[in-house]
Image: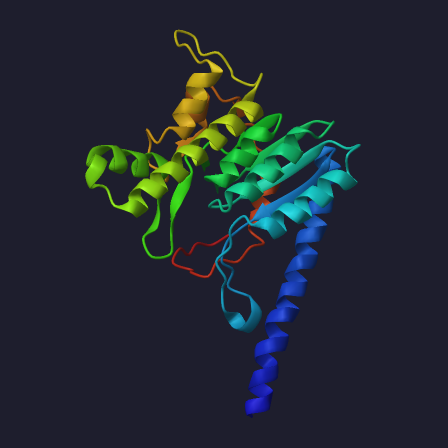
Length: 265
């Protein structure tokens, strides 16, 4: 009985994953025909079906960067579409993906069905066009600095703490403040690079590139601030809400861990 249960715990989740993956691939092929471009997804969410049935927390990392860069190189002669659903992740991986997307010779679009925060927003800024569902959100891109002992905090907050305490600041606060200044400089430079020539003027407001970058990077908003498509347009980002319905249909193929919401389809 123990052997049977052990094998079931391994085989069943893998068979379910294979079935769902085939459904997703079929849907992606259908979207490629309909949208007239190559489609890739980067979707980070905990799924009910996984190895041993244990969900894993996912975020942008170097393995994502490696796979997406390979995809961009392979399809350099095609317009590309990237479906993003992510809480963010590693800064260097996000920047690497964003630069590769920006340098792609054909048109690029990022589609945000629900949310694309932090590093996901950095990637979205690189595309020629950001397409968001009207209820979807992106977020600020102020870097988060810290360690396992103290946790992660916004870079501007470390600088604020060091400036307030001055000579009474602990050594680690001063070190984190120094790292934060460098991280902010990097993020500002990258955001400026990605947004060059993409800022949409808003009547009655001065939406210069520097102002938009400062809004996203400075820490004026907390890191988890959700910016809707309308709010993203208001600060000067070029965002469309002409969102393809088949992307929402594709997202239904990802089964969440929790089923607190029930309804009849």
